[in-house]
Length: 448
Image 1 (spheres, rainbow, N blue to C red):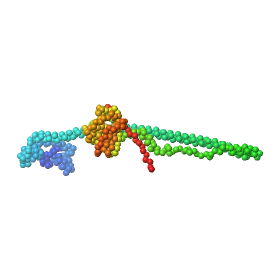
Image 2 (cartoon, rainbow, N blue to C red; image 1 turned 60 degrees about the horizontal axis):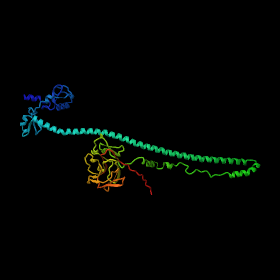
Image 3 (cartoon, rainbow, N blue to C red; image 1 turned 180 degrees about the vertical axis):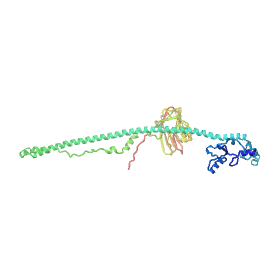
Image 4 (cartoon, one colour; image 1 turned 45 degrees about the horizontal axis):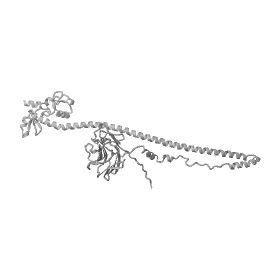
């Protein structure tokens, strides 16, 4: 009986217990690999047993054979699990030399234990999948916001150029108008000169013609009129030889000389210059920046990407950092009463609750304090300022705060700076705080 059972559970090709059994349309079963190898060798697709043609597309798993969980060596039912070999065994295998001194457990007990272990192993993957799915949502939102940023920035660029184009068009028209006015003046002057010259030519022509007529007259008449004719000819006024007046031509050099530079020099009075602007990518989601990125105010929480540079505190940084040289800028605080101003070491600490390096003066309800990551807080006695000037001498290690309206010194930090420093604003008020523009001088080096 066992022999017959073993025969029924063996593959006709390899004569071993079925592995991954498949059934053909003729109802004969084979190991999947054995059948595919047979077809590959014979280069046809027929049943190895009855020679009926078949198809690779109809290799159906033989679930009836798969359910026969019998030992391939002893044809006994597989009811045990060897923990040492991590494989199913039958009662005969358990007592064989192969599994001597091995730990063997009932299959249902091993299944429960291994299911639990696999479930535990699977949990990190599920957690990772959840994180990745959340990240994908965040990435999608960021991609959409990038498009919004690009559209807003394009609009502002076009508006700036529209203003510049308008200025250039007005300047072009003004200079062409000046050119046309000078042309009209010069043409009118030449017209006046030519009319005067025409009158002189006509007078001289008349006198010459009259005198020549006397020369052609009869002798008696000629001598009779001679004295009067000579006096008239000699008394005719002889003006200076006509010459072009100085400055008769167009002053081309005045219109074209340093044209581009002069327009640019005039343009600088129409535009503003800031030592830096604010970086919207660092701004807390309840801080909103002006279109030109020079002022900040509180607002309702905005739907912004949770990018690594964005602060969790009510902070925004300047767009440019300094690691050498001297720099200065002025904050207009107005009537606001809750702010911190100065410099910090940048957006790498944006996600942290505290900054690693900072040098600030701050106010809260009328109390002013100088604070830093390397100094103890110092209380400042000062009147409420409208503006705060910041002077940074990176190389000398000095950061000075002053009141530009009163001309008074507020506080100076001294520190050996080693990292790039960014202008720093922490803003908690309901009003607005802005950076004031600087006057951009134009200097021309004269060759000596």
